[in-house]
Length: 601
Ligand code: GTP
Ligand code: SPV
Ligand code: MN
Image 1 (spheres, rainbow, N blue to C red):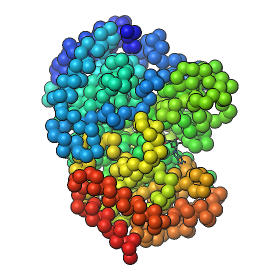
Image 2 (tube, rainbow, N blue to C red):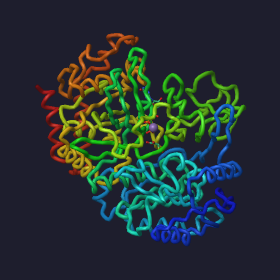
Image 3 (cartoon, rainbow, N blue to C red):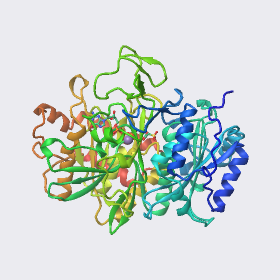
Image 4 (cartoon, rainbow, N blue to C red):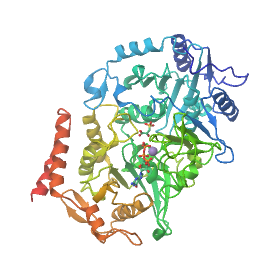
């Protein structure tokens, strides 16, 4: 069989950044004995190493160098067509008991799972290079920051981790020599990229992740969903902080008053776009800045929640990105980026559905086949992604690196809902807000394998990412609220409500500023709202819709609470809670009854 990741032989001085920590050395040695690689490459994150690895990746056809005039210093990668998204059905939480993983996770017994994975990893790196990737998650001087080491046999993973995290010497230094220090062990091997041998396994008690059989995204960039969310949420509960699937943005008024908000939307539901929003002309002088686009780690300080973005790059959805929908993303991916599963034009540029301008007359699609505008297949995979450094973002928040984080004034939940859910509403208080998060739902997207467009409950957008029992997770949220003297206000938004003919009623993107403005006004206590059974809704004149081409009827539809729809919705909430087998805290069960009672009044 062809070796899909042949070993590289670096010149002297490259790949030799061996850490001094004995625990790391012992662990790497163990994995080496198991996987039998040709050699071990210790990453330091330097420019010289980077240049060398890029050159090797091109030589191996793992990366294709794009036209330097079109997209300087950027590369295209095609993943195996059987391996294009997260695989939730093959993702496991391996806690000693099934109860600890809870009703929403796939559980498997730790000892058996280690033994199965070790069987798969036996000799798996023969003829390959074992890369050791040290990285930190979080700003260098944050108390929340965590150290991780990822072992991988994929050069693409190494190059991606260099963008997505603070990688190399910085992590080795931070870990130091203490063999008892806390750090995450991640082992990744491509094996033969066969879906039948694809498992993403988490061992929270051991701070360990083992991922085999995939080469794509959240399955293999172990820093991201695996460490920062699944293991992260487990550690957060134990240590009294929060690890959430949230963007973090700053919004500054023309007078210079600044607020920060965090928002949890499920995968491919608009986090990156919201985090990079450019306000419409009507909001001249308002400025939105990005702290993070996917993950927030939050801690309590002085009775408030403060958030940091643990990542150092963006792994974002490409299709639909253009200079109209998200100019800041376009600028972020204009150079020094990796593209995965987009189309390649004849002049060495990248193309995707929804990119500005006319489609190319000919391109090579994401599978490597010839493509023309007449082709039935999409040129770019719907879950094709860019990997870009945060420093490319023209609106990166100046406090991105601030160790203590930024103070959060509002938390926003939102999903993709064609009906029922209004554009925006506010919870009555923290516990009610936790209920909104716990019952949120969204139509599924291409970010995970499986059917697309089906409404599923996705509590706090964490269904695939909560590393422990979801009932305890809800309890943790409620407990955090009790410790906050100045809690963020909690909101729910829906950019995706559809009207007649199945068209989105709301323009979205930059115009989401109008909703954000109402939210900020609510934080200031300066704007109106109407009480409804589901929460506070903006009145018709409370939303600034000036210079927006939106008729009255659409606005009514966007804000409408249809009692028949809500009857069904509440039945779904109840059904969801009941399906969790008794783990939902009474306080949330009670919230459920209270909404129903408010409708009955
Ligand atoms: P992940 O990276 O998977 O977590 O996704 P995300 O939550 O960051 O979503 P992203 O911002 O990449 O948007 C996903 C898709 O939703 C893209 O196709 C966007 O074009 C689309 N989208 C984002 N914001 C809006 C919006 O306000 N309105 C509409 N109609 N579509 C949007
Ligand atoms: C998501 O699915 O939420 C993503 C993509 O951000 S991945 O990193 O592949 O999980
Ligand atoms: Mn995103």
